[in-house]
Image 1: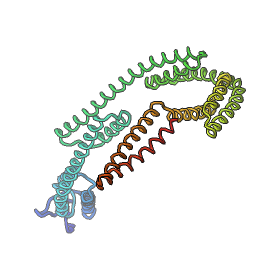
Image 2: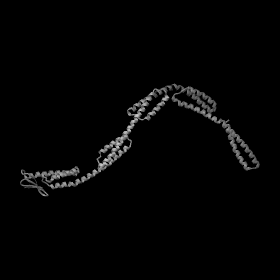
Image 3: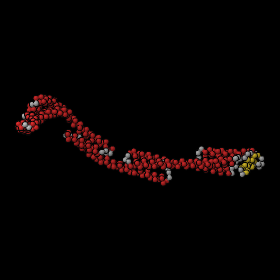
Image 4: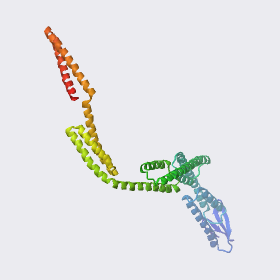
Length: 412
């Protein structure tokens, strides 16, 4: 009989393993030597021990989920019940038993991690729903649609949470997207309607602009083009497919008209250049008249001379447009100087004011004569107080009389 620490082989080749419950036959190898038989079943144990060690390591490192680990431990444990191997079977069972608390701890940790992920997913979905609802109340039709697509992609990446909460948050998110999409479609439908209206308005404006392009009524037609441009801006954009073409036609009609007008004006300016030379000479005469008036004060002579110059000015005709402001401004300055001189003369010779000044002189002279008579009477009576009073009164009236006489003389 051949024996080892964990088994033996009897004379008929039966192999036994030693357990805590005693010996148990694991097999028979009558055609092998006892050593070979014992080595065969010991090798089986070693393989099984290796499998237990590997499972032990995988569970400790967390490679297996708690469910997978539990299932694997159960399977190996069942193999150890009547395993046909020679070795410390109890040690393998103990090693498997060590994994029970480990798996329980891992299960608790995974549950906590899952709960944390669910809480984070819930918070994130609440954020996404809130942002979607905010977008739905806005009117950012371009960026809003892009952002809602991004939010949906983010939502799809999140894990589900408890059904009731998940369904409610999805209802909020989905409702916000639907409300935004509906409002966006309505907005663009309204914009399309407005653009179609603008197309009709602009087509009418283009037709009128093209009809006016050959007009030679420069003033009225220029004004009408300004009105058409104002109406064009007020019409708003037409559909993009036609807006650019309508503008090209509208602008082309304007360019045709104003180009013709500018050419006509340029021709007139050339024609009127000689008139400007004449008017420059007349201006020198007019400005000399104004200077002479300021020096001599002879208004009648200045007016007579200016009338002659003014008649020649009118006969000289039109001047180039870029000279009108300068020449007319200088002529207006001379006119204003003569008008100011007329106004000054009128103020000095106003008959009504002259009569009032003469009347004031007469009244003051009468009042002074009366006061002088009263003064002589007071002196005769020896009334000193009355004398002083009348003398002061006379002094003031005589001052007023001097001023009234001067004013009366100014109106002579």
